[in-house]
Amino acid sequence: MQKLTIVKVGGKVVEEAASLNDLLDRFAGLDGLKVLVHGGGRSATAMAERLGIETKMVEGRRITDANMLEVVTMVYGGLVNKNIVAGLQAKGINAIGLTGTDLNYMQAVKRPVKDIDYGFVGDIVSVHVEELNLLVAKNVVPVLAPLTHDKNGQLLNTNADTIAAEAAIAFSKYYEVELVYCFEKPGVLEDAENDDSIITSLNHQQFKALQETGAIHAGMIPKLDNSFNAIDKGVTQVRITNIPGLQSGGTTLLSD
Image (cartoon, rainbow, N blue to C red; front, side, top):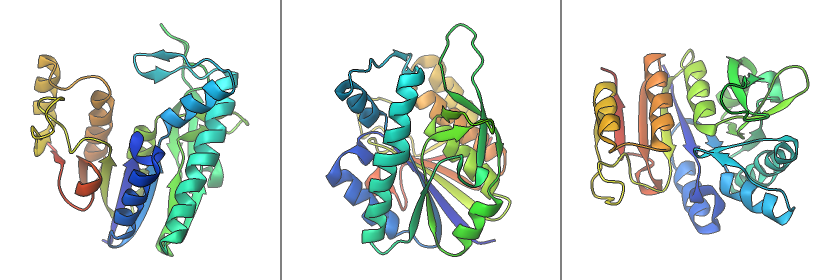
């Protein structure tokens, strides 16, 4: 099977011009077929502030009311997405920016209200990459924004790590898929304050043990949950790393 690399990038990496340019240089240098998935939460927060819209977060997760949905649609589907596409075109990579509504590639449902009403946040229910794969097979790079839809006309804000994992699972029918989560840190760390404390490989059992001790916490937990779910459902390899480790390095996740 041919290899496909799916890179999910977020945080400061996509929102600062120098780091974004470095990322796109390295991404362009990856061999073979590829897909880029991005976040953009800091940019959305900054835009909301400029528009006088309050940002509400619960345990690091954004509450997406109607006003905030307009902001994230503009920022994720527009500003951040098209900046990345333009940057890739400048490096000779033929790219196309898409949300889950385009080609109906990712449908979701509005998250049910339990203890917290997250608003217009989507939980993915189906992934259709058949048409998307026609582009990938022609060496077009899809740049996927963290927005989905419910097939009834409603856009939904959806976690970019989850979008990357679900896309990787769907594409594993066609390719040997490597999923790379790229952010500011060099990998999963035993000590969040020490960048030299990289855990070079990690299985699910070790992850749970480190979670219980508190060594792995906060935003790293859903990232790893998504990663191990992807491995369990057919993705060949998952790595977590930073820009310099994009081709090799960081933390490699292993099946038990």
